[in-house]
Length: 397
Image (tube, rainbow, N blue to C red):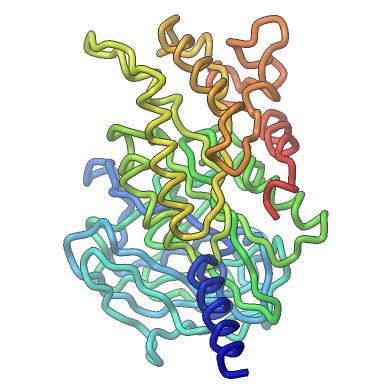
């Protein structure tokens, strides 16, 4: 009997060792990958003694939430004043009766060390899937090199002084980027899980209608909810101009894979749509086109690292981009070869043929006009819908 119990215990430990961490019941429901601001100082928002109010739509719901703030791209500590979270009304207004004061280690306000994130204490705020919440941060001394997410496809505001608890801001100024806010996590009675979408501007939602939540990961989250997958969240780790192998905007995908994918609470799957910026920028400056093997090697690295952590990898074919400013025949040849490998490899845990879903049938090197926002590179809202619909939800079990 003792021997049998020991064998069962060892088997259970082995299962736990190869299962993605559930982070004590927490899973990420919304995400913005941290970035260094590339805007010149004179064009950055004035944050000195200002309240920053941002609205996000979470994907999965829960009985409690917590907020992840980021000072990871700053070399200076960040003094944080009052922080409030509430259900979001029109133009970021606080819905009556929903406001919650956010604490950190039991206290209001905190100092976030340089290069570090900060998790809030759990907040007793029940939220349904696809709920919009408003987060208000007071920065008493500003943040000259605040960690940001450059593209948000959402309206945010700043206002003078501490207005974190105000239903509506007085004399607000509209801003574009996400400021300091990098994640919202949920806890529920049923352990939640998270699907991370790793990509560039196409995943980040560049050219989606602002404030509409029409990025393809947003629409994927809606499909999961309609399919009854209530505890499954989608965390968007897209960064505009990001690349697999070299530095565009943000660290390259291999460099940020641990922090933006494997460290995400509750992660079970990652959907990877990266590579078009590597191909498009490869020959600038007279350099040779990247061989397909270079991109394939990057995918293999991510597969190996994810599988070591029990995370499944779903690869997406690189979208057609003929007509975009950096398209050329060599890049197209490499794209076709990489996509053929994605469709046929058994190294990943599946693939999504986004290229086929969005291509012009008469010219598969080009995005169909009905899905093209007009630059031959970025999909419009309908294109994002087609992309989300192309994902076989059975891959995400």
